[in-house]
Length: 365
Ligand SMILES: *Cc1c(COP(=O)(O)O)cnc(C)c1O
Image 1 (cartoon, protein in one colour):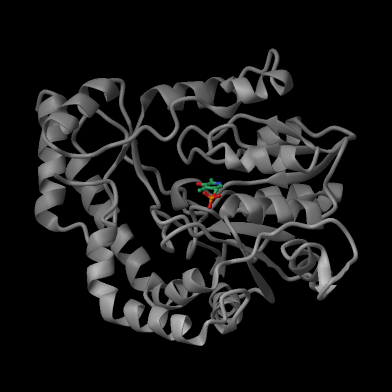
Image 2: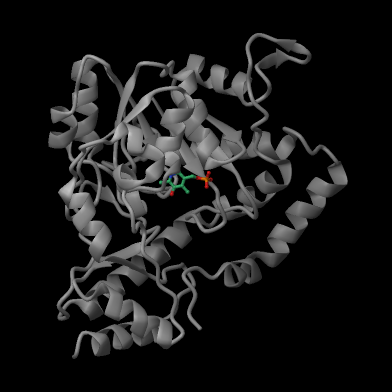
């Protein structure tokens, strides 16, 4: 059996470090916003090259609180990708704004600057690029549009921890960003967790207040906030894993490039690196007209695979009211042909060869 991700292999390699870190946190009994959350926020901010990092309860909350602290709300339109996990657009809805889905680039699957530009209206106040599958969106071009039109750029970095654009980390470029530490993400904890990043002192302070019941001083509440703090035990785990993130992302790239080399002669499209930045391969996603046959062959051989995402957001019942008449043919086409293969830092050569040989057979080679 080859899984999509192998969390057990990663834990086995880190067991001593993680167990020690958890035991220390347990011994301290400082379970809410304790020393590990504080230290992790500093360490993550330093790694990401950003002034502030604020730990929150999930990636979804990170996007929600980043939008709220940026002042996005009722009546605002936020342009984003239809080809992403629903949380991107849920966060836009939570603050009362309207998600405006625009079509994606057929090779990188990310937002296209031209379709963003074409969707701008008087009500557009923000753009939320998603660094899908770990590949940075075209932030130089999208950032220039935002700058010119006075729009806020909030990055969805849930899949892109460690990806860079011109040597700058994703999450350090827009006004603010949200990261997820869901266990299978490039930097994952052992439950739910998330992070908001920003270089703005005011926005950071607002997120700190929002995540803790609208309070700066205990039992004095300046607004209605949330209970959305990063858990101390998760922070203890994340501090250990952050020390290994370069190695993990390097290995993901190694696996991806090996797949692409071995699959290059088959009638399918391997992932396109558009050169805008460093792709960290949260997913390795190919396109094929024979997607369903390849899926069946992999499943029969005990190899996991997955369709991320089978239904783009403009076709979800949850967004039906926002999307009457919306036509996004590229997103529809990609959703019908995409297939993600197992990828994780510990995936070895023999398993890579096995995956490739099953796909080659399914393609009749
Ligand atoms: C995982 C994910 C999220 C949400 O993160 P959670 O931690 O699961 O709440 C948001 N956006 C994208 C693109 C994701 O992949």
